[in-house]
Length: 237
Image (cartoon, rainbow, N blue to C red; front, side, top):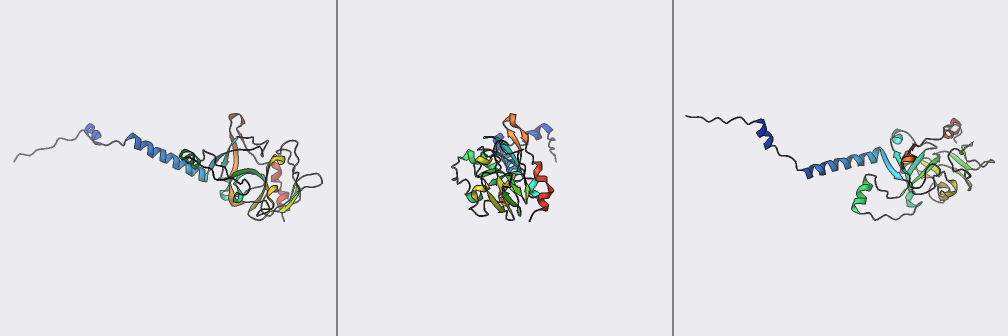
């Protein structure tokens, strides 16, 4: 009986048999992967915000783009002197209505590339347990009895505060103030709300790490030396 033997398939023929994924499917897959990575980065590592007001002058000016990092608070606490971005406590500080976004804006917002409001940026003056007072005989804010020399960061020509206050910050909350003290509706202006004007730590998005735009303003944001005074901790009630 005669037998037929199939000729071996050449490498070129094998390549022809492989089906190539259509380019449009590759694009969708790559786009989905990129968006997923961006969402993870935004949720756990860094997020970009823009500065909408002058309340943090001279550190920030209107429309600065700032990069907020979240890694510092994975295992550590918010520290005095940190410049933080936090959610509007109960929506009562800004009284914003939910913005109406189109599909593209919603997508960009998801990955942190479109601002939707509802967040504020301020400097932490007191943490849970701190006794924060304005002002001593020299017009300085004191934290646990230690006066703060704030001339290195508050707007030149402004007083530390033109409003008196005396508060012991509840545990798990923060007393925050803007560097432009005459144009910042911060903790001082919300003392009638829950927490006496303080904001909850669990509402903190992260710590401002740098100004990243415009190009001529790129700089790192550092914590002032005055907040590293160990006497503040020693005197904490």
